[in-house]
Image (tube, rainbow, N blue to C red; front, side, top):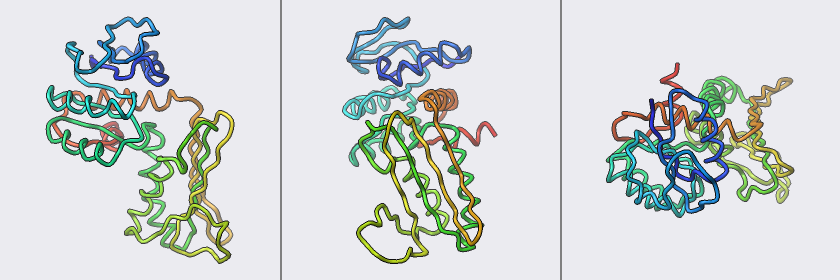
Length: 254
């Protein structure tokens, strides 16, 4: 049994994960942390992670960026593994993650979906064949109308996965409306669509002469990210200090 502290238990994703864990016999939430107390939970809830005195194997974090520094201090002090899902972190916080990973296991990925992370691996193989054969590469991502950032972190992670295979030689192009010229060969176009309640759609397009290959991922609910976080927590239990990501989880399952 994997014992979890849910950091941000009363937020939207915290509630999703709590529901998923309640139906999973291999994992349980033993404590939660949240500044809000508007929900009744079947486990003790603390306002700050530093107040939590419950024994656990791993923390799942879906809180806010302003709570991450105290969380990382707690993890380093307690040698507590953490699945860190909060986004919008500063450069200083990203550096602190690296420092904390010298003391305990930290897993962080741009997207917690198992499908997206499998796609990241598949793109490397596709890139080695298609990009080197002259195929143009475009990424189109779609999200709900409340999303603040564009392009999405996942779209950038997909582009980075491709570009790593190409030696970092490709440039990212986000807007072609201000120039009138043909597409450069060594570029990856990234387009963002915002509308309605789209949870998250990503298409990676390899366009060649008389042939188009498209890799697509559709998230129909936030549960896909919760399921990935739960798999990551099970994986991280008992792991030694270091940085991990979802590719490590996928490799362990394979």
